[in-house]
Amino acid sequence: DTVLTQSPGTLSLSPGQRATLSCRASQSVDSSHLAWYQQKPGQAPRLYIYGAYSRATGIPDRFSGGGSGTEFTLTINRLEPEDVAVYYCQQYGTPTPTFGQGTKLEIK
Amino acid sequence: EVQLVQSGAEVKKPGESLKISCKTSGYTFTSYWIGWVRQMPGKGLEWMGIIHPSDSDTRYSPSFQGQVTISADKSINTAYLQWSSLKASDIGMYYCARMLTWPEPFDIWGQGTLVTVSS
Image (tube, rainbow over all chains, first blue to last red; front, side):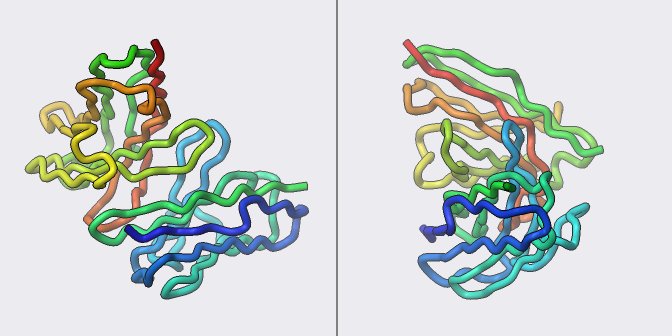
């Protein structure tokens, strides 16, 4: 299985700043098969980015995905208090999709 | 509106059986895969497996193959996750989620079902 390692484990930033979350894969991932989810405390995950770059329905353009091969990033511009959550990357290639362990985003 | 509504929290003893459900509405049930994802307390997400309700084609993660059974009843637009003999290590939140094609990400998620296993 492809192991996804996310960094940092926790990111603490101020409102208005930019957050850059990293997702590193143990082997090359097809960019069309890389997603990011947001999970707020006590809630189910929500799809934010798919195909490495495409925003899901209703996701603001402050969120952008990038990368290729084994290195992917989620960038959040102009941080807002509502962005507090854990963010997970996922590779959904065959045979078995896997998730990263998550990055917790805190807003100071 | 697309909705996946899961059954309520369960408290079971080791060795007991359990079947939790995911009732869907707002879309054509047989046109999408339904998957299950485990989240153990304070931990990350684990992809368990998926089923296509049109023909019950089912795929499991090797980590969950033989440990759980995924099924679907297209007459009532509902998917299921079941255990024949629960272990203490099965404790966690279980989410169902929808996927258009395989392989794709999960675009809509249920609210989760908390399973507690304790003697």
